[in-house]
Image 1 (tube, helix red, strand yellow):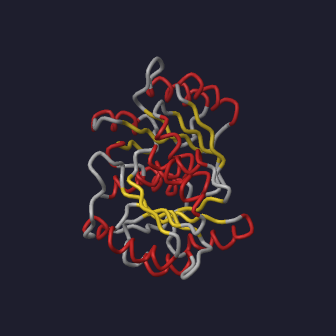
Image 2 (cartoon, helix red, strand yellow):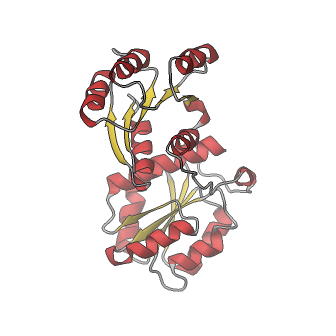
Length: 265
């Protein structure tokens, strides 16, 4: 797989892209400013660069110029927070591979990277997801999240952590209750333990995924079930995380998922 360098002063964007590219098997490097970005470019020789145009001190245009002085052929995708067609023309004329607006969401970045690397990313979400009838999360919430696990202690830890991130959290301790609660509330994300009584996580995923194309399913698995978790990706799960749950990693996965859902809504 490829070596990808992300240069962006927005930590959420860096974290989200890092999660996606790492899960796809790529080696990811990142820098929060232009100076360190150019230094990393010299040291690691990435196959592709994702570069924010709007950074303090050393702007994206300056960084792009310095990268081009080092390498004429490395593909560089420019990200911008502002729509500027005239700037897009200038960057593309100078050799940028793409000029993309952050306002269009990160899914377009993932598509552009896959196209440049000669891969095609399957789209699991459809426009119909935006039309699903839902019971909204509480006002001010980042979204409605359903956590399903048969261990009450794990559920308690997850609920406290996820609430601290700004989510409205509902919980279920078995697969049957998970299906019923999901159909009633239509959560934005379902955090789903693979091993549960009643219905296991795989059965729940098979039941709910066709009904809820706009919901992100994240599987929780023990180390011995990693192959099963990977198989769940083929059934439509967005990602998986192993027990004991790394809360920092989970937070990054959730940020990435919510960015994608907002871009497709």
